[in-house]
Length: 177
Figure 1 (cartoon, rainbow, N blue to C red):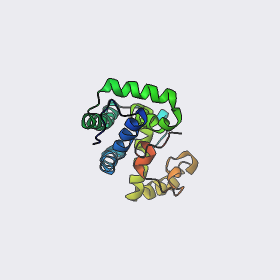
Figure 2 (cartoon, rainbow, N blue to C red):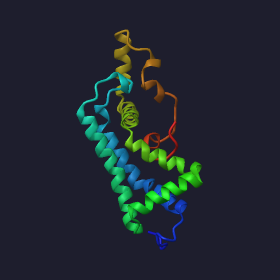
Figure 3 (cartoon, one colour):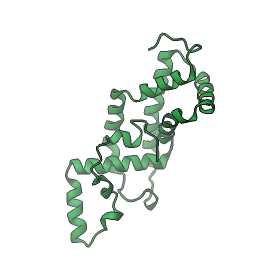
Figure 4 (spheres, one colour):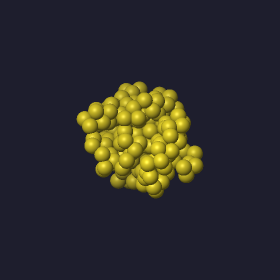
């Protein structure tokens, strides 16, 4: 918690503090553990090709709540009210849109249902890989004349990326593409 009062805190400092609070390792581990627990419920096919059960909407709400609770903790620790934050975000976006893009994108991702579904699929692919299940699926696909690798979300995992599962969805607060 900083000793700067919220009245004296410049917008960029307030938003940078919020970003750092959301990127704290303990919180990122909490988000990753939550996603790992529920990811197997999500099909691997592209999100527009499958039925979206009500349970996924509930999981999305739960995921959003993780971020809302964390942001509320930060605001409470800093003694900042929500109106101040909204005024600050609006001013900072007008004055310096570039530096705030990553934070805004990350927060928007927690609000975007389809981005959430894609994130959960990415985590499922990593979990299946870690548990060796993708190898069984590959063998099944080959024996059944299955899908081409280009059609499978698993193929994106094979690129050898070293990014953490959390940084691909929300965690590292990188800009969305």
